[in-house]
Length: 329
Image (cartoon, rainbow, N blue to C red; front, side):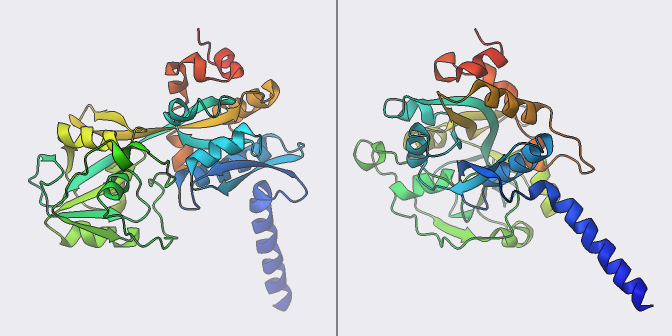
């Protein structure tokens, strides 16, 4: 009997070791990917990219490693100076920072996230700045806090939440100089309630007033399925959308056609230095478009990549290898 236990323990450890092989990168040269914090989609993407790269290129002496850099402007400066290999940031950042970071180019568009507003009263049709007394915001949200900062209401607890649902977007930030002087300060008459993501099921099940804002990657139905709640998603009114865009130039108008809902979103891209090697770029695209087969299904993030949107980007901002790869004129 003792021998059987010992053998079972050995087999179990061997199985775990085999499963972990793709993530082992001891002795390899690290290629830094600057991202949001450990709970952000960008960090998780970098981790998954590293695993896929190692599986696809087992003989290479390189691997990717995420690095948290909260200020997106700093990410661009680091890439400009080739202090990192890649950065992940909102697509529009390049138009805001291109003058000071001329050597930074877009490699590929990754995904688009959007602001989902859920009416807890099940009756609201549209959300405005002061249509509701209570706003519920998961910690590490990005879009609404940019507006709150302009109203001096940004006082959330920055405690990390290790139970983050993987639909949460990157919590990085970019300084908007316009918010300090050029724009009038809006007045919010309600209350902002910061919540842990672990409290989302209670909020949606037992609260019947206010708006829950959640930054989504993928269909809103996937969040409602996770929470096992019949949530009512509503759009933002025109004035509220304009207000959000005024205080965050990175935002894009976003429309969910089937639901006829208008809101705002952020398109995220992978950036490289303009001097980046063409062979490396092609290998990177090969990993993203033709990832190695595994016994596991695609991750949530990889399953929601929108690489084809790269074709809509002006070639002025693209790396020359991207222009060729995507056949952009």
